[in-house]
Length: 188
Image 1 (cartoon, one colour):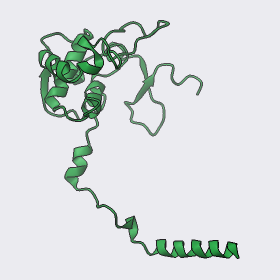
Image 2 (cartoon, rainbow, N blue to C red):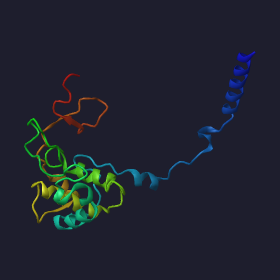
Image 3 (cartoon, one colour):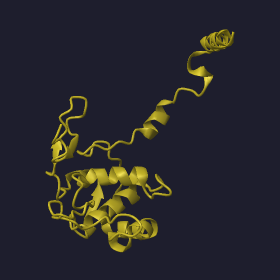
Image 4 (cartoon, rainbow, N blue to C red):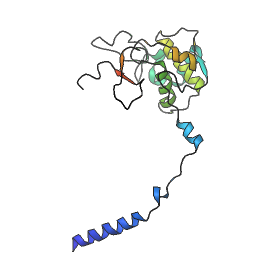
C-alpha cells in the first residue's frame, strides 16, 4: 500500500510538471544591449579591449586609493599577493608568481582587474582607471617606462617577461591562442 502512495504521488507530480510552460515562466530573454554589457572578454591579442587610456602616474593614484589596502605599498604585497617582483624566479626552488614574473599577456591584467577588482567592489573602476592601474603595475615590474601610457593599442603590444613560458593548449575545443603553463601537459 505504501508503495502505491509513492507511485501515485510521483505520477501526480509528473503530471503537474508536464503542464508547466517551457522555462517555468521565470525571467525573460535578455536584450541585445544586456548581452553586450556582459560581453567583456579580452583576448591575449587585445581583441575586445575598450576605448580609454591611462598613465603610470594616474595609475599610482588609483592604486593608492583602491588597491594598496590589499596589495601593499608599491605592489609589494600585503593581505593579498604581491603584484611585482619575481622576474627570473620561476625556475628556482621558490618561484614568486606575480603579474611581472608569471603572466604571459598584459591584456590578461586589464581583463582581470576590470572584472574582479577591487575585491570587495569588483567592476567599479572605469576603463581609464583600469588602463592606468595596468600601466602602474607594469611599470612597478619594470616592463614599461614611467612616461608610458596604456590604451588598446599599446597594451596589446606589451611583451611580458614570461610570454614564452606557456605552450599552446592542444585541445581541439579551445581557441588557437589559448595556452597553458609549460610543463602543465606533462603526464597527460
